[in-house]
Image (cartoon, rainbow, N blue to C red; front, side, top):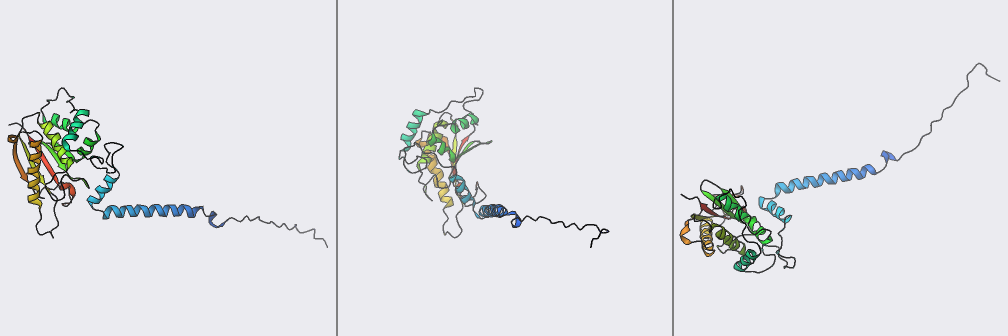
Length: 263
């Protein structure tokens, strides 16, 4: 029986397309990378906080390795790049290849502290041996004169451990300083400093050791050609004047050679 008075019934069917839950697994890979990066970041922050100054400096030096003297040298990466050479022979070879630089600024008095500082820091030209040796050197000019500070570096000391026996790098630096300072007649002074030693040590050697090393530096300068009567003062300061915040930092082991101003 027809129903002409009623509208036709329309049935709409919605097509459903299934996707993988949460749009697949790409988000999981991205989240894993993010979590790994955050873990590495917090691990680095913890290591920086937990490491001592000496350890941090050691890490820094690890990523700035020494340059060997030649590509065919031995396996060591120290000052001489694996080669065994006496300081006098080494200095003669360097002098033959790279004579001391002249002061370029004509307006600068060649005997002024500034000129001597420039000459010392520019010694050796492109020599990798001198470049490595000068890593121990810090200079500054004060009212008293030109101070040349020589300090231990991590794994690269100037003396044998806790002794006054100089290593080859110190002998080389002493020859350089003596050669530069021989061009003037100013008086000089030497001073020794050491790092602090743990309180548990019965006889901390700081005072005696700093004094012994200051005298040893005086002897090396005289052996390098400086007249003995120019050395006016030799002092040992023990650990009383640290150069670093950490009193036991190896860089507190250092020597000072002071070229006094005239008058």
